[in-house]
Amino acid sequence: MESRRGPLKSAVPSIDVSPVRRCSRTACGRPAVATLTYVYADSTAVLGPLATYAEPHCYDLCAEHSERLTAPRGWEVVRLLDGSAPARPSGDDLEALANAVREAARPQERAAGGGGRAADPMEVARRGHLRVLRSPDN
Image (cartoon, rainbow, N blue to C red; front, side):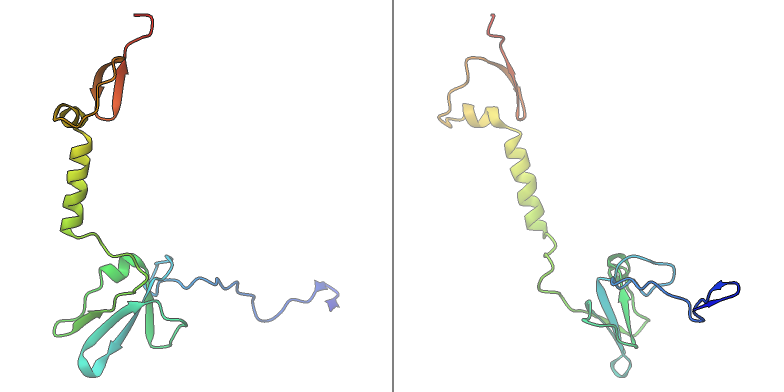
């Protein structure tokens, strides 16, 4: 419909709604990954995976805010694990990784220790996984 001044505008402004739910914390626009619910009768804050849909008395939190969540004195925080989320590495996992990196950095010791692998006659030196080769002209 048009008036003398041009097309009529709607009295209700159009709001573009993002399909991604955002963190409920003020001034945080990161995507939500967890939902926080309070159980006042038990003085408990329950933090779990992102709920299927937004509830009026629940709060969606981004990864950073869900990790830093603390509860008031006397309250307990219960963190429900999401079965699909990857587990954080344990101390044993990190130690095994460090040992594997150290072992990979010592290829000369493995070859000299009777690994059965003969040295390449063109190889002059080795540093980690890098090899210095003799020029075919020499």
